[in-house]
Amino acid sequence: MKAGIFSLKRKIGYETYLPKFQQSQANTAFCHHQKRTYAMLEADLPFHIKIDRDDKGFDIRSIGFEDFGGQLKHNVSAHPKVDARSGELCAFGYDMLENNGSVHFSLINKDKKVLSYMNIPITSPRMIHDFGITENYIIVPDLPLEMNIKNAIDKNDVIFKYDTEKPSRYGIMKKLNQAPDQIQWFEMPNHFVFHYVNSWEDQNENGETVVTLWGCTVLNVSLNFNEEHPFWGKNIKNFLTKMTFNLSTGQSTFDRLHPEYSVEFPVISQELIGYKTRYTYLS
Image (cartoon, rainbow, N blue to C red):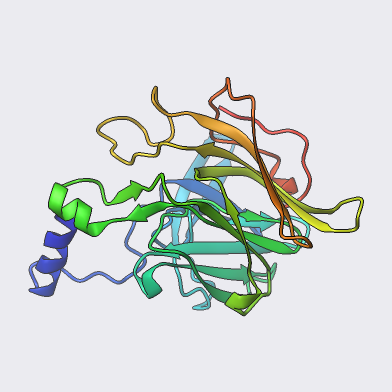
């Protein structure tokens, strides 16, 4: 309801028009790429900050929003991924208005040049907070936490609702892919993931390419902050989960580990993002 009133005020000139980007508070997470540190909020561009140090302490300075010399045309999620071995920044952002739901993806190299851009169609307008990469692939979640404007207006409810009846999907594509029909989609049991641990590609004993993805899966998502935090509360259960995708056969697996533990906020060595890891820290 508030969003609708704000839009009406903007149209009649009561509210000052703001550009699509460069208007938010980047306050969710951080990303470091080629000697620059960015603060992130998924509705906007990365925000460049600089930390000045001396013998007395340090100071954090705001430099400004980063569009890589006008090359970056879309918002970037709170959790972009940096491949430390190649120096590539994998930036994606979900768009709930374009084409009834899509994901923008840009591949930015170590020289801050956008090598590739892709608009990826998904099932419907959905929130996608995190995603995965491997050495050669991008893993795009298509999970049923959906924008429902009618529900928000009619019932004065939250704008995102989790659909427990729809399956979850994952699309896997090459980093330089330019065609939606080159994305390989896999269907999984119903779930949502706010944060993934890590992902990597490997060859099995049959010489088939298998992508492994670890994440903290949840089955009862609510974004009503008046009740409890959406992924941390007495009624929320997050399971450490291993998913595999065989790109050769099209088969997949979905296995929850240690169901007695509810875990979130996974952290690994940032130098190993996209490559096989053995350990993670979890809350």
